[in-house]
Image (cartoon, rainbow over all chains, first blue to last red; front, side, top):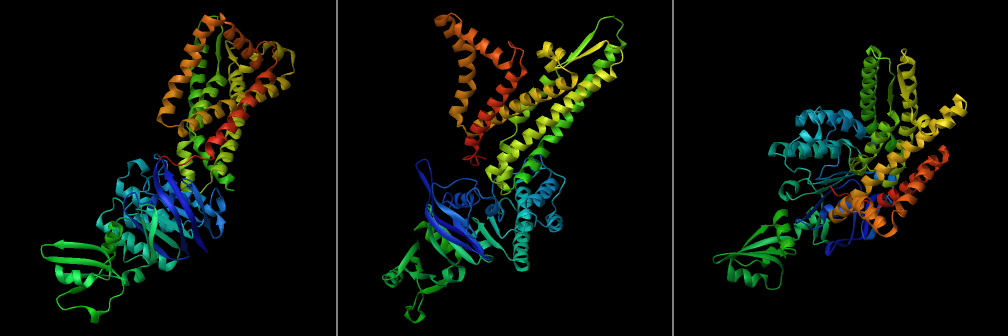
Amino acid sequence: MSIEIKNISKNFGNTCALDGVSLNFEENRIYGLLGRNGAGKTTLLNIITNRIFSDDGEVFVDGIPARENDEALRKIYMMGEKNFYPENMKIKEIFRWSKEFYPDFDLEYANKLADIFDLNLNKNVKSLSTGYNSIFKVIIALSVNTPYVLLDEPVLGLDANHRDVFYKQLIEKYSNSPATFVISTHLIEEVSSVIEDVIIIKKGRIIRNESREELMSVGYTVSGMASLVDKYIKDKEVIGVDVIGGLKSAYIMGHLSKDMVPEGLEITKMDLQKLFVQLTNA
Amino acid sequence: MNVKLAAKYQLNEYIKSIKIYYLVLVLIMLFFGIIASVERSDGVSYFGGIESTTMIFLFILGLNSFKETFLMMLQNGITRKSMFIGRLITILVTSISMTVIDRLVNSLGELVNNSKRVKIGRMYEMTFPKRAESLHVIVVNLEAILIIMGIYIAAMVAGYFITTAYYRMNKVLKIIASIGVPALFFVLLPIFDLAVFKGKISTAMGRMFRFMSGGDTGNPYNLLLTCLVFSVVAVGLTWLLIRKAVEKN
């Protein structure tokens, strides 16, 4: 049971948005789909959900081709950055229709979340602020109970409190009724504690696709005098360097053998955001 | 396929507008009915054009039937095919229902109108008067329902086709279509026709229009056939436009 993406390519005019992307979103995992602006994250999610079509390649949902297939598409819910709901529709009506389209939609839970987020169900979409526009879609995404939920910038416009509530609710939901969540976001530091697997996309290509633990274990930072650092990194896979005065920090991919670290150098674990910045800058 | 669900949603979109439309229509009828009944002159007042008004209303309804629904369907995992078939069902149901409602509203107007000083004009009877007089009243009603239904379907389909075509066009094409098409038919063609063919094209087009609408032969089935052929062609073209439509939100 998975969403299988096979060799997907997409061009917009002369711009290549996706270049032969192949990957799997396995059952009941939380994925972080990370990439810089214009890397192709939203394009990939849009292709999975048929909002746009790929030029090449195929998407399968639990083995069923997803292109123009109701059976496959009803297993996926995508919360997009843009609003696809009628602007004049009230939130309570949207919830009602969500129940029609997705029979497993938990209306009671959605109303409970609306209370928690302090969302007025009698408001229509166009009267909501940017934050509440994200909130009502997040609530649907958490209540929809489809096997696959794709979240594109779910915390867009949310204040720190609401973001905190969202992450807590997501973890609670995932613990109670597991599903596959794919979170595409720029706020890597915040999401890093939630995600289990990391997919990094750069200029339309997947450059990393592994578990968070695995990825974090193969990256570290070495800092110290520039001459010492240069000597140390000579035979290592360096993905980036920062130089401030005579001090240098190098970001290294590979396993660390602590007995090999010369005196005067400091070794620190690389956090996901640092790793992401270095990988996507390289 | 989620056709049933797509049709239910799309029909629901129309219901509110249709209710408002009939409320306004009935109020207007009552207003003019009251004025006519209290009027002191001996003349007869005519009230008609309900079907023409409904036709325009349905055309506008068709024009507002694509973008918002399309995005909502994409959001809720409904395929283009299901959405399209659902829309066709909606168009059929709406057209049939409104044809019958209009017929009933007209009949009700005649019943309520005791003074006989208000005459209610109906599209079928006004367009094909000889035929309406020569046939039995039941046949007239059935035939009228059939013809008006064809017109309503064609009006809705035309609106749906235009709005879908506009959605698919880029900015340049939209400008060309908005200015170019009216300019071609209402300015360039008449000038060209007058200058080169001495009005023969306009005459031929007029003759063709009269034939297609059944105006020259008095045969309403010409009009029905025209509406059906137009609807089938427009539905086919609309599907070609929809099957590869993507979000442009």
